[in-house]
Length: 491
Image (cartoon, rainbow, N blue to C red; front, side, top):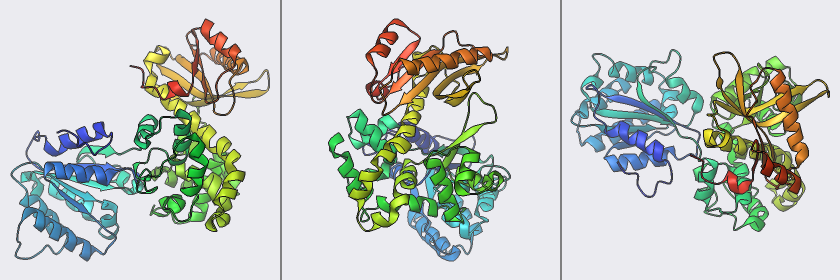
């Protein structure tokens, strides 16, 4: 089934969903799919388009009591099936049976969106669905293609995991991610690569921020970026102003917002290790294990292992707008509320470039390395991340921003495809290359295979003539500028 023209990108997601909705089953009976993703990523938009294209049923739950939700679902099902029941279902046992029994002839998509709203007041519903999908259940002779969708990641992630009743029942599990950075630039209509990085550092690839939250206001050019920040993100009259706060408040597992904001603020300001976060918020390391786990389950932060120091890891914030809020807005919130956005931005812009854009640029470079793969480094990247190399002789540590590793060899050795350094605001010179070369030497002594390791420099501010000359002579030196970063991935 062709994707509608009004659905931007999402080609792979559309193919998976349409196949699930229309493909004849391997055996008779209803099938289950689970679609999740953080808020504002376009899940509902995509599923509504799919139900329209397939002639399916779309039901969006609201925050309501069990009785009201059950009544609303029953009314929607009756309208869709044009069925008149002598008596409406009195509970979810009856409602789910009615749904399966009324759709039997051909595969029909039924979407229940905002599913966590229902399970909050009807926690037995997943068990009921599991029973009706199982042997002897009403789903055995049904043609329903049931999709459960929601944004509460901790709830949706738990539907198919551990001892959940629905574990092993789903024929589709799809997580809707933000647009990747190249697609985000196209979606925003931004052709200036430097501007694209700046905008992505603030809003990432969240589709809803392009129109619904900015009323279609995009920066006209690089010179308009500062004014755009002031009139959109820092303006108390726009939806973006409080959005980062709402993203945290919407997670039901977060019961102490002050603590979680402090954890996020620690990460946003560069305190990315367990110890650094604990020290920042004035707690012991073992006291922040739970909030870190909750934020991970909610898909608000991710744990990134140090590729060269087993057992070490760092944390990063998944949603750029939260990073921007914690690093810039939260510190000066009282001033922003009284419309002093221009003064705040003037004083905080240097912080934005160092604490927000710099780390975000490094993440984009890692995404570039992963996308480019074997075509760029002469081998398939099994892992792309960052790491720290200890240099005992010089009593220092060398931070590797973009480390690309091949798969583990059978003899236990590990091939390093590339070691990279990413600089947003600093012109890259030979001394950056020298540091990478020193790291390569140290890793060779540790047993890594570095014969063909590419030393890569990712420059947001350009390169010195000396490093350009070095790269022209040495095939093991790679320079990546913004134009290359946004070029289509190498095949």
